[in-house]
Image (tube, rainbow, N blue to C red; front, top):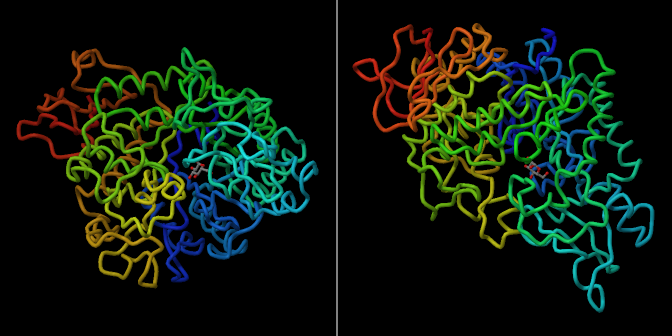
Length: 543
Ligand code: GLC
């Protein structure tokens, strides 16, 4: 394997620009803020950062509604700020991945504005999915497709036509059958590659192509789509045609020097189906959401690990691992509920609340388990501080379109997007020079501030630093997993395997389990007095 393929074992840190660091004090993070905090990433020891969208956008879906793919939103800075960020990252040996949102544009995009003005039958309308409705007067939508954020996936415009939006009304889906749409994105790729980016995270990678004729589909949207026994593949997801798009992009990436990469956000199961996105001439990586969603039991975790590794093997790709991102409840809170409790719609003040101590203990154990697995791992800003979800955010401040589109039934994703704490005693915990933040931070977050954890033995941040150091030193990302023959690998209690010289054991049971003799390199929590591994704890051993 070429040592140059940096992404094969990379640890990639997701920066959510709105909430990472605010240099200009307007309460929203920005590119200069990110640049000013890059040394934190160096200190952690990650290989790369991926930035969620910072492009011009009306921000109806926090920037995943892009109005111009080749510029920076003034809220986040300028192209010159982007270039400075790139230079500062390169100086520190950090790779940079940007987000690409090809499934839909913002309704503010020039193309959609042109389509509205040009009217039915025009070429401009052809760039999107405009259709006549049903009913006497076309008053019924063209089909029963539902939006991921709730409500119908169709909205009617003044002249009577309807347009498709799998997400918010402000995110019209593009028509990828049109060569012009493909050409536009190829230019966008080149634009950012020319500015030096190392890769792209491809948003909604399983959605670009819709089944011809847009056949009806009335089932509710589920997060992970799979062709079940009695169901065919939903007509809006995981269509065969998407793969040709990624082949063409791969050719572009490969025409640039350095190992440029793509990682797909494809909510697709089972693992063999996801593996189709990472065939040798397509994407380099795909997010492993099956792993993220696996319940906290030994059997489920073993199954998720095994099926993930087996899924990519036939195509020669690597696995990725992820526990948190800007779309799901942070794992320090998610794991604070009994297995089987769903946190999928977010958490509000009147919902059952997680057990914070249990959640953090499990989150640390989950992280150590994840960072020992072969392949590439993704971290979400703040998880290195043990940061929980903001679970009592006032509904009045929610900004996720899910909240309004679901008729205030689904809380949505704001709770994991709250600006992160840097300094315990500064206004907005050092997020920015102003007092405010675009989402209010909980009053008790000083204890998670980076300056409280930096260099403190036993802190979550110290655990991440040490784990990343040991992962690198032992080549875990490029290793091979072998299950040990320990009896509990058959039982419900533990996950136990070797990766090279390191043995990894996580205890999912209710009582401590004995550790084999050998040096404990790192543990996610204190060991029992007799040296046993307590419940909800992971240990790395040289044994
Ligand atoms: C992806 C993004 C999510 C966004 C959606 C629509 O799932 O991760 O944040 O809302 O796409 O672009």
